[in-house]
Length: 203
Image (cartoon, rainbow, N blue to C red; front, side):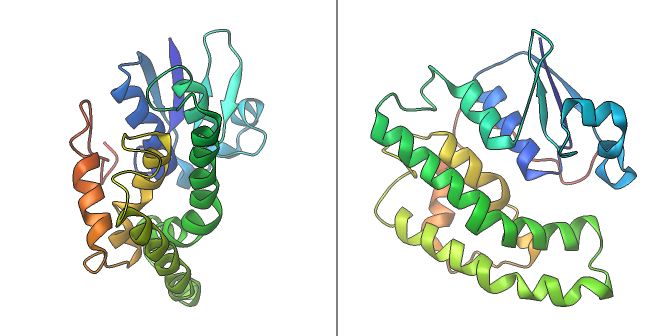
């Protein structure tokens, strides 16, 4: 059985949970409290020397980290990862976009606000993330004005990667009301069989 070390409030961890639910993959979820520095222990760093979640423990006892790498591993030979080379590259294109143009703004603003409680010393950084986040949302909305999902007509792990932090972007101060095509996409995504909501508070 797979083991996932993560936090269900984290979008990067939620990505893994979503795909596992969609594919009905049996797994054990092990909660890691990042605010208690549980990723900084020597035991955790043996799994991921970069000291970040999520981490996937494979059945042979080896480990895989970085959320989008885990998604690609689990999605191999499933409908969530196209077989066509061009479409697979397009999936990666949007996953790189998510990591470099989306997450650094939307996820970071959310972390500062939701996890840290918007401390005064980080208010300037928080507000500085807004422009970049809206730029990413504009790119997404324009693409979705002509496409049902991000790659082809069916959902892929590109959608999972982008859904995770987009659907809680309000927790980072981003108002999605003007992004009509993103709103439509969110509704379509949430109709996928097996969909589960992200926890808003850890149990």
